[in-house]
Length: 522
Image 1 (spheres, helix red, strand yellow):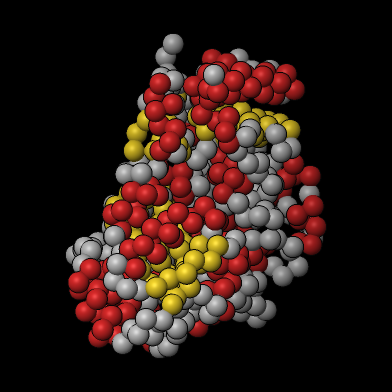
Image 2 (cartoon, rainbow, N blue to C red):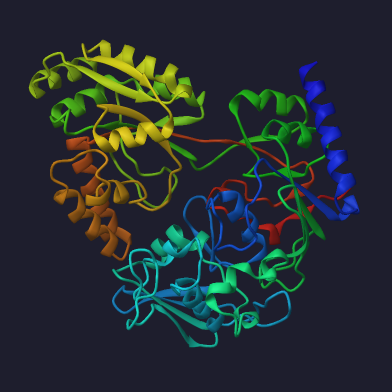
């Protein structure tokens, strides 16, 4: 009865939205659901910096590359790239067939002018910080007067980006590709930088992506049309209509045939798998993790590395993972994302007696530790509390909101905290930002061993040389255990019954291969 009611509500919602939206021939349209609205169609002016805005702008504007969930890269706006200047720069060879929706060819000058405009201190962009890796910018991404900006049009189809520190092309693209879009700067000539964000252009934008803007009902519906001239190929449908609806209506709408697909990647909670399959939807497990769980430690109040390792051995990560991920996850000994280019030989196993021996070695004298968690993880915290009690570690649980949890750890208020993150394909996706003077959230007394290895990994060109350095960092982390890696979780993807060739996992990088999507026959 509940399922029937949900389906009826979804049908009513879909009909009401269709009544106020543009009339479409269903045979030519991909109906796309989204649980939150984009907040702008200007990619460098999102107040929230949300993935919902990114996934929409990804379709209208072009990016340099397409990023797969496993960290591999395919050409997009750039057909190829290579390192230059001893690793301090990357040269991108742009696709010569790329063009804006008004027919103007995309050139390296457009890319360089886009970056120059967005880094101009007079331009009120909300996304300037994404450029702070480029030479000639300050820590906020603003161009520094008198310094050469690290964005140069070498020739019509060659763009050179120069960085403040050695940066491999793959590192830059995995880290920043989703933030870099080319704008139609030929339409901005003579516009004062201070006025750029207020232009009507962004209400009916002209990009160079696989889909063209048609019309928008702000906060509710967006209609896009296939770009027949997109350099990677015309999408196999005529229009894509993005409709915002309550998250609880996405799966029922897919089952009822009112949606063809929903963001992100048709993600599905384990509890809803049976409902989806009963409704005729094929469900596949994700191949690359979309979540990473850790137990944060305060290395000032829990100062012994032996005690850190004891906590690691005391926790039954398999049981913890099963409690939260319901079988869609794997316990881990490292923060390296499985299925990506970098691996580790370190393994996890529980050892209660080994934990007790390490506690004695570390001088644990029975003090009580505070474990912070959000309310939705109180059950997980209680299970941890029980497991730690088996080795005689006493823990009290404090339930707080997410902001209080992270600020409390930063201030040293808590001894431990449960946190989760969206993992990345880079070997330093987790460690680089957490082992720095500006964000020493684990309160490590001496960051030097970590920062030294992190700098060496960043400077390494890749391959065996970088893997060896990654191994050294992981061995150091395993010995000191400043935080406890728990498990990587995977998601489920509800497969579209009407659209073929969707790369479901890669939507986690806020890009979708819509130029390869095709409507199924019949």
